[in-house]
Image: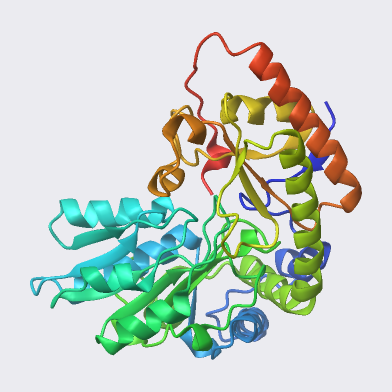
Length: 397
């Protein structure tokens, strides 16, 4: 089978050719250790610091506030564990949303189990939006941090982070946002958002996997998770992966250039795809339809089917999409995000996510819609005999 259409950009994006071109010299000729003082090391250090500057320009912050890590999950764990460590023995209450990525809620669950923090989980409204007043209701004297993602990886719903940050700061509370899904797709100015901490990952904006970063307005709040040498201003030990960092910078630079034009095209394609699906299946539910969403994200619940089987059937046709049941070993279990939104569990089991990106063209929309509709009808006529447990690691996004 030949791959035909890739619509799983929220899981990962292909490396952009310009990004690969920028990265290749640091895999071949510019091989020095960025901590070395000789010419080879200086050349590598230049690549690292240029990338830090490029990322800072995309995010509207000084490069001195950015620290490179291996991924978004490491970045999120670093922020959350740093806050818990700072207030050890003093009482540490953290407010987070019930729709966070697993690297947030599993980290917080672990900290709770170790009695290092107490967590209040805020549920969204029916459109997947976290309202500031709901957060305000949970604030206590020992509330130290509010952690709300910028955009949800399953629904694409964008949160009112600026309003949340303003409200929290009025109470003297720090704010963290997992911005992994938003950066590169929508304008993200961290100074305008007003957050104290934020996290990013290159492979969501056409960079390689294995490189992430975090923003800390005040670096004194960070307790390193990895100890060793003095790399990354002593906040993240380990020899820098110079080629990956350079690629991250190049991806950030290109995103800044093409973001607006790209977003307009993605919105048009997503809306066309959504229209085609709903015209044939009007009872389908578009998750977060009335909220602001990422330009290329479409999460739809189809009644009477299993979304995971539709994902597999589409894959057999050469079309890559994903299930709404993200990061679950038993993929028949409905998504925690959709359940938190109040969507019926049976309907939520019929969820799929189509996430568009640079790999897509308007000409592909009709093909994808027609294929999905045909396979949905086939599943309704010939329902699976039994539910099988699937381990679809690509859903862990």
